Image (cartoon, rainbow, N blue to C red; front, side):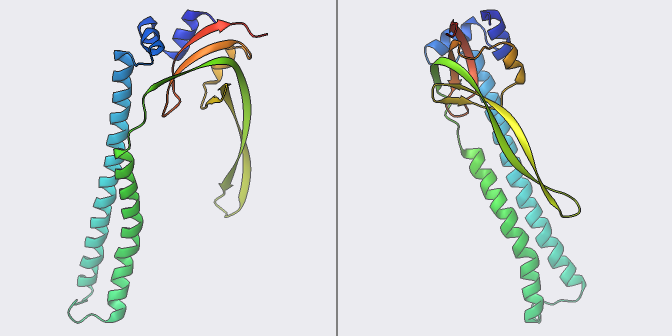
Length: 194
């Protein structure tokens, strides 16, 4: 693969490559990563807020329905109280757990330090068995095939299948990538494989 093809495929330029060689992000890469982090953070915060609003809505709905049906909390039977607690408590626990995890994920920061790996590349086909539940209740398994790009002990996943048109197995490359996500930032061809 030529340098220009590599640059187009992995979406980098010479400025990016120079920064990556120094184990740094270029200003463009840093902006792109920060924007992606902001989108992720906003998504998880939004999911947490929506979960809390749903809990509040369920609580309001259960209590207002109980009042409409003549339940007085000062004279409510133990069964009425147990029912109300269950109707509010179970969804609140489930959605509260979801909200807590959403806020926790929004606070987690990915290690965006630039790493590099140099070596012969290999492609490995990985088969994963996925359980599928059908509307009639039956279950079946489906095998999903994915390919990984491996360079020494570093594994790159979720590859665009067009990569097979550009990279040849056993050729030697240097890949610069983000440590936390293993997203490839840039790459350099070094030598043909033997």
